[in-house]
Length: 140
Image (cartoon, rainbow, N blue to C red; front, side):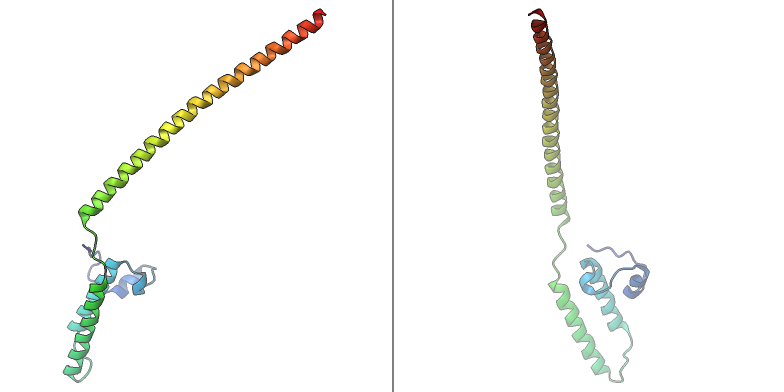
């Protein structure tokens, strides 16, 4: 689950210390949940600012209902075992692709050596042909 890395600081204090935008849409889901919980604790634990305790309780319960609704709408965090299985699958795919890549390059290197050898042979045969032609012409 979400691990809290802050030391009792409010989300606004963390926001000031980092240069990130603080809108809820730009927060990571885990950080956003922590922010909502902190807000909930602040609203429910703070003394009532209004003179009417009933109005304050109604406001707190409606805020609590909104926070609960938002938390329910958040997608559940992925299962760690599923993440590990996906990681292992991706590693296997990368290993397979690497093996294919290396095999292709090994084959390309072999073909390159063959091409160079054939070019060298062709060049030497061309040279021998030219020398033979010049000999023939000189003999005539």
